Image 1 (cartoon, rainbow, N blue to C red):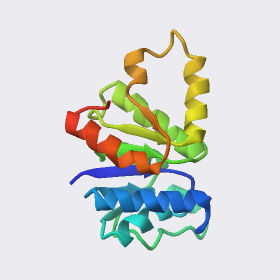
Image 2: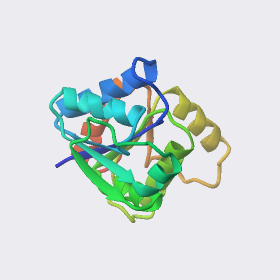
Image 3: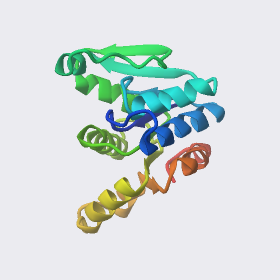
Image 4: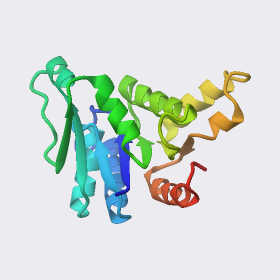
Length: 186
């Protein structure tokens, strides 16, 4: 079962450009035979889940007691087929990173940035199996250009190659397929 974890903001609402792009991504992943795994809540997590379900895909929602106590009234999105639940955020994020064949980061904030950093670091240190890590769109292109442009001497070219920025959600599935077929990130 090829599970792809999708990270992204909990804030975008249905109908917004970001939501519809995440929904498209979920549909493309499901149509390509991937299982979609998200943090299980709203925003882009819900959108990717919705797109996957609308295209016959299986959706795993990785939820957490701590988040629900931090945000009272928060519930799992209705598109989740299989829930995996943890008590704390650390275990939730580690599961999303460790239990996937690849990870895709959509636009997001602090949480998404931490998921990217953890995924990248765990791949770098071989704590998880090598896997594609794709960052989608202009936000992550700008963040990575700034970060990597200021990190000369700190991040090797080998480590830089462990993640890739792609322009849009339509570029994700072909890159995932190519990297997974090669048995490693591009």
